[in-house]
Image (cartoon, rainbow, N blue to C red; front, side):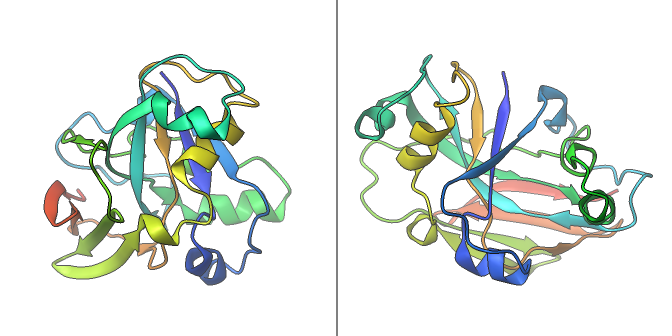
Length: 201
């Protein structure tokens, strides 16, 4: 199982990061060990600037390669929310030196994932979600604001990587990303239903 993460998929987030809008999906990988296996998240000792990024996550249902966009919707049937934690200080240092920045994105437990999955069949409206930090909404997103749709992402990624059953795709974060500290509390809701609720310890 692999975790594929899409970067800069919301225009306002690209703007807040002072990054240009992409002409095609940007993706990077996290290993399976990035999934949060405990109830709470333990702040890693190697960073002093840890940021949250809340995202809609898709689960791949079957093997696929070079998937045409018109068939992409047959490769997933459920979605949920996850958080892509980023060690922003490590990422900044890597970028300045022209180095890969997996160290800032792919560390252990950097991908909290809800255990509550929702069927996508029958969903006609936009998928809305939000993230609260210590009870205050810090991120609000909707699938309608994505630069690249679920199907476009799957079609593009499958040109380069074979998708397999159980793979996860983090589809990008809206604006409002920010720092967390030890003692903070995060709560994420998907279509008005709470799906993530944990502390930073």
